[in-house]
Image (cartoon, rainbow, N blue to C red; front, side, top):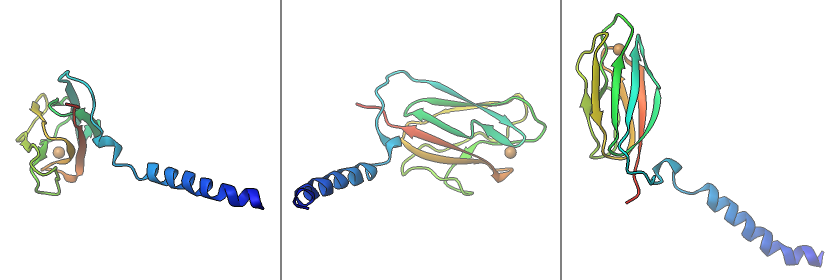
Length: 135
Ligand SMILES: [Cu+2]
């Protein structure tokens, strides 16, 4: 019994450490050491963006390629229509794309971007997580 009482503070401290680790800031905002500017492709089809969830680094360029399909689509993130972006974040609107069309934009501000096709709304949406680069 005495041993358990002696160990109790140690157990409590270890528990506290474990708990704190679980409460660390969101890992996707950890900076990444990389100076290369990447080009990240997204394929547009009827009615999807692929990959639907994309992770890039600040300053990378995303290029949407509408490869196969018959409908008109857009890639839009302007804070309206259910789209969301970080404060001061990059907005974009491809305008109407038909098959064969492409659109690209560089995204400089880290954060999570939820974008849509304005023609198909929430049914055709994508997410881009932009991670900060380490200074
Ligand atoms: Cu669409």
